[in-house]
Amino acid sequence: MIIGFLGCGNMGGAILKSVLEKGTSSHDILVANRSVERNTLLAEKYLVRTTEDVADLASCKVVVLGIKPQGLKALKFQPEEGTIIVSLLAGTSVATLREKFPMARIVRTMPNLGQSVGKGMTGILFDPDSGFEEEDKTFVQDLFLAGGEILELDAEEKIDCIGAISGSGPAYFFLFAEYLEKAAVGLGFTKEEAEKLARQTLLGSGEIVHQFPDISVSEWKKKVMSPGGTTEQAILSFDTAKLDMIVKCAVDAAMKRTKSLALETTKLK
Image (tube, helix red, strand yellow):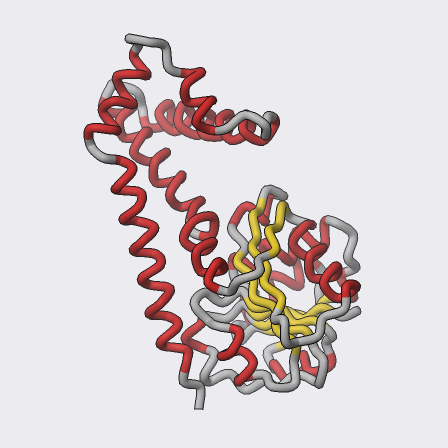
C-alpha cells in the first residue's frame, strides 16, 4: 500500500521517520511538498520518493494530510474514491474534510512531537460515516503505533481537547524546563550546567512515569515531597501562585485558538 504525505513538516516528518524505522519500505512512500528544498532533504535523509505536484498523490491508498489548516481552502487535490485521508490538521472538522474530499474516507488525528522518538501520543477519530473495515483501521492505527501510543475516540470534540493537552503538551513541559534552567542560572550555575540539570531532570521524570504506569503522577509527587522539606515548600509556593489555574488558562487558550481555526476552515467554497 502506497502512503502519501501531503505536506511533510515537523509532525509529518516525525510520522514518516517512525513508520520507516518500523519497517515500511521507502519505496512505499511518496511525499509531496511545495518546497524543493524540503523534498530534497527528505529524499536524501530517508530515500523516499518526492514530488512538488500534489496530483501525483491521487493513486495513493492512504494520504497523510499535514498542511497548515489555513491552506486547505486553496489546496488543489482530489484523491480517488475510497482513499483514506488521515488529517493532522488542528481545528478542521470531519464535515469540513468531507466537503473538501467527498470521495475519500476521513480520519482525524492529533499526534504530538513525541512521535519522532517513539514516545508519541495520538488521538484518532474514524469518521463513522466512512465505512471503515477493521483492516483499514488497523493500518491507520499502526502508522501511529510505530511512534508511540494511541487513543481511539468516539466523539469528535475530544480531538480538539487532545490537541490542547498532549498535542501542545510537549511545549508546556519544555517551557517549564526553560524556566527551571533560568532559575538555576540565578543560583550561580553556568548556562550549560543549568541546561544539563533541567534536561536530565525532565528526562528522568518522564522515564519514571513510563516505567511505572500503575503509579499516578500525584503519587510520585508525594514520594518526592518530605513533610516539612524543601520540595514541599516549593509545591506550596506553586499552589499559592495558583499554578493549577495557570495551566487551565493555558489549555483554555489553546482550545480557543482551535475553535477560531475551525471557523477559518469551515467555508471552503
